[in-house]
Structures are given as C-alpha cells and as structure tokens.
Image 1 (cartoon, rainbow, N blue to C red):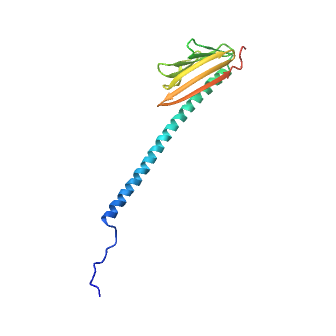
Image 2 (image 1 turned 90 degrees about the vertical axis):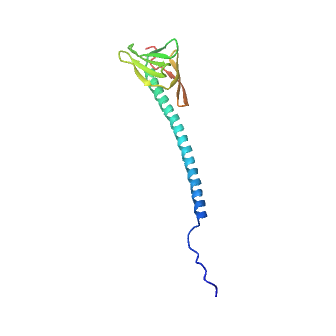
Image 3 (image 1 turned 135 degrees about the horizontal axis):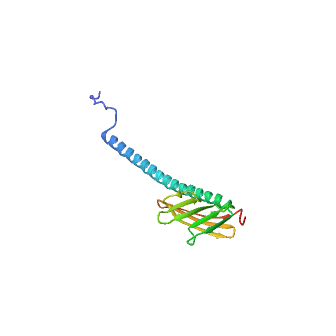
Length: 157
C-alpha cells in the first residue's frame, strides 16, 4: 500500500488567479478603447449632421423668401441681400463677419438672429431673376459648405 498522500485541494493557484485578472484587465481596456473611439466618431459625425441641418434650414428660409420676391439687391460687399415683394416691402439678410452670425430684418420689425456664432462666410449674387448663395458654416473644426441658385418667381412684377 502507498503511504498516505496529502489530498490535493480544489481551486485555482495564485498564479492562475493573477493571470486571469491580467487577462480580464486587458480585455476591459480593449473594450474601453473601442467604446471611446466609437463615441468620438459618433460625436464628429453628429456635429457634421448638425451643420448640414442648420445650413439646409438657412437655405430653405432664403429660398422661400427669394422665390416669393419680385426683386432682390445685394449690398456692395456681397454679404447682405434685400428681398422685395410685389408691394415694395422688404426683408434683409445680413452676414456679420465680426460675430459670425446671420441676421434678418423684416421691414418695420426688429433684427433677429438666424444663426449665431458659426457662419464662416456668406455671399450673395443677383443676376436678373436668379440669386446665387454661397454659405460656409464652421464649428469645432467641422465645416459644411453650401451653394445654391434660386430663381425669383415674381421677377419684374
């Protein structure tokens, strides 16, 4: 008969526990890096979407006003436009380069801000019954540029 052996106890050794903790930490670190990168990309994409949305809104507002107009005139610097209806009433859109804002003023009312703080550039051109618009928005190192040509429907009425 064999002498009495010490019974082997069940469980993990200290080395096995340490190795499994290190492996778990590496996996958690990798998951954290992936989540951080994903969140950063999401935020960048969302910022671009917001600029696209705001630029589209500005062009929608301008196109509605221009389409219903009878005429339009551009300021000497190309940064303001006055849009006149068939009764001679006007609305003015103006780019303020010092504050990076787009403001509008309806005849007889107070000036209001359409976009505040991130209009990089805005230019208007009028040729006969067509108005060209170039708009650049910039915020947090993200930029969106828009070009549009809109026809004045009631031109010359």
